[in-house]
Length: 547
Image 1 (cartoon, rainbow, N blue to C red):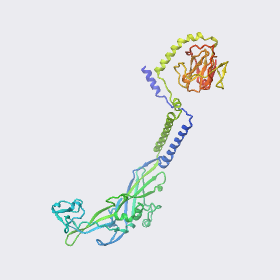
Image 2 (image 1 turned 30 degrees about the horizontal axis):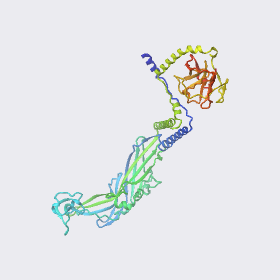
Image 3 (image 1 turned 90 degrees about the vertical axis):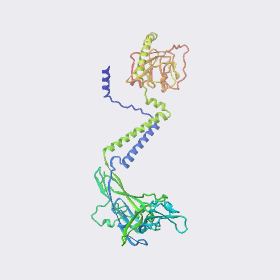
Image 4 (image 1 turned 45 degrees about the vertical axis):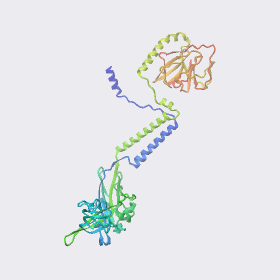
């Protein structure tokens, strides 16, 4: 037993299993299936391959370097600074030219500060006082400008004053110019040089035109049709970012310059161009108590007596971030196969959806479900059925042979089916069959039977099983009409009439059964013809068989 099991397992390892398909002649479901296929095909071709270039291997690990330079001069004349000429060394911070830099456009200057004692600025909660004990000596003023000395300074007859502090005096002034100090900064120019490299494909490029004429960059300006002259006017950058230059120059702000490289390396390297985008990075539309951008710095000096002084400057301006991103793609067979396989899998999902519609939603779902799913009996149940049929055969074989005349024991010949639902055969009328019957069957499966006229005035039930059909006989005497319950979903009933003919009748069309008054109808008996086999191909054309 063990050797037989191992042998069967070894042989089954080389078996090939394939699916069985059922063709459903339903136009609605068929149209739905074709529409799903068309939609998936359009998605695969248009979106995956044309737009997203799913046939390419992508490299997003962009390596980038940015070098910036700002050029331009401005002239100012203020009471704090007097006449002054501003060049790039004065208004660009930091001067190294990184991908983030700041251009000063406005200033609040507190000149000639020195370390001494003075009153804290009004409006700072921790610096307010009414008596000296409110100002503890050595305690720094929170959000203030210095350290408390222990004295409270009252102005005139006022009951509330400010603490005296040790700090850079005089403290910073809060008055800001209504107009930007460096109004001419709008015409400053920014040179942004960018080098990129895609390591996967060993591809490198720059955003500067490779020209032998060195004067090219001195006269060119960036424009929609000139992407290889990365010299930008500061006022134009602010405008492209959607802001007004005078507003951002007065309060400050943050501008983003985005350089995007999307390179299709299946084409020539000259087709890989940079694209520039500009936007305001700080929230200009929000109402914030601290809008814009500013910071403080100081410039120190000493007088002739060696006392250290400084000029404190609160700078407002435009902070520019240069942001580089991109990707490169090149044809590769691996992503192509993956995306095609995904499309084929989506086709299977469309078929699955149509199966759900076919067997669960439409009106004829039960009919299609019975066609799609086939019930298979277990081995133990089939063995018990075979034993029961063998016992029945032994008990009824003798009685069947004695009661039936020898003249009626012959093979049936095929006969063409009738063209009318109401007809006579040898004077006997075949009527409409009942929908129920006491006839017992053991091996029958729905829609898997055919009928023929058998010996001994019986109607033969042919079980379609594999390439052969086993012939089972259900004894029906003269004048007896019996229907088979497992054929109720077929379009035709078959039964033996009073003359021993097996008739084919459409459902619901035949006339009412008229049985002869003189005929006797003994109870039906069941039996099995031994060694009776019928070819399946012959059964496909069998409708009515005469005795």
